[in-house]
Length: 330
Image (cartoon, rainbow, N blue to C red):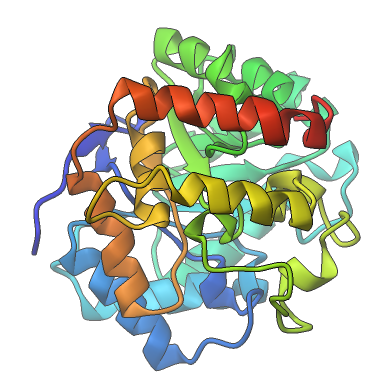
């Protein structure tokens, strides 16, 4: 196995790789993925030094969790922290975020993953009011006390939600969208997390593939791919698809971003390198649908840090092309 930089994941007390493996794709929400191909992706990630998998009970209605559980049973040598999420399978009202439901969701994820205690459970972008509820955190603390979960965190849509969660003493980590097309978390969220000892997991790091530089305005995605059916937030938060940037704007900005890649690095690797060198980031979780993608993503951790001129160019690109497109959201 290749060695990769390990970073402490906030208040979990455990280390994870600077580049993790997101597994939304393995559930089938980006198009069909065969089980053998899913296992190949996970194997390539582990062999490349990845020690952090991120999943959710809603990815493929549990298929992603099940695949990870079966894979890790076959690979007891793989020392991987698995973070899952809960909450999105229920109606999105604060009243559903109660201990009895947490236990039921928890039982399903433990069964899917084949474990007694989940390493990390994250509330999966719940209604904003949930982040301020004392009863919610009391319920999560109960799950820890009962050894159903080892730690808990949150996955958020907005910086305000992240800051609310970071203030809670039991929150181990915050998962938030961060990439060269989404810079707002740099201003307050990352500094606050560092000060509080809370881990930051950066998701949607390639803006749903835009930052790979492979797409044009004429690219057609499969009907079952969220990049087809959720461009305007029809199924869930628009920010989860192309980071909330309209597709035409994103393609044009991605073409310019590709020109910033250092020699020998792809645009996708450059985006990942940019993320992991932001102060306060613990791990970035790109997805992959092939072994080659998983290996290429992991190798971004071995790149030299981007020079200041590149960081400045990313900021300039964002200010010129992206800031107005998202209208200050998120």
